[in-house]
Length: 89
Image 1 (cartoon, rainbow, N blue to C red):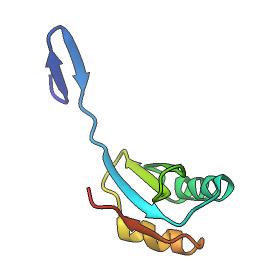
Image 2 (image 1 turned 180 degrees about the horizontal axis):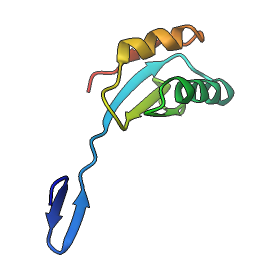
Image 3 (image 1 turned 180 degrees about the vertical axis):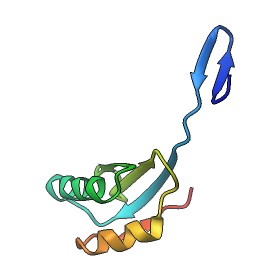
Image 4 (image 1 turned 30 degrees about the vertical axis):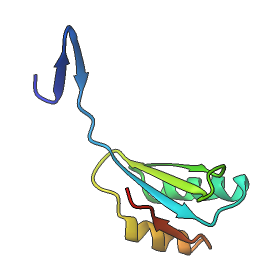
């Protein structure tokens, strides 16, 4: 079966999903929610969420189609006053 993995009697569909994690300067939930909404509007294949409890104020991006344009996203965020950098994986 193309596009799937068989494990015993179960079949799992392969999902190509890229993930990138960014360190940010976001400190409030309100600001984070605004950014997530703008990311979802501008990058329709991205799923974004923040972990503001982490010391690096993490922005996690999952891309369901294609690849994550980290540089483009960093420039996009800067337009909203958000500083971001890719965390090494």
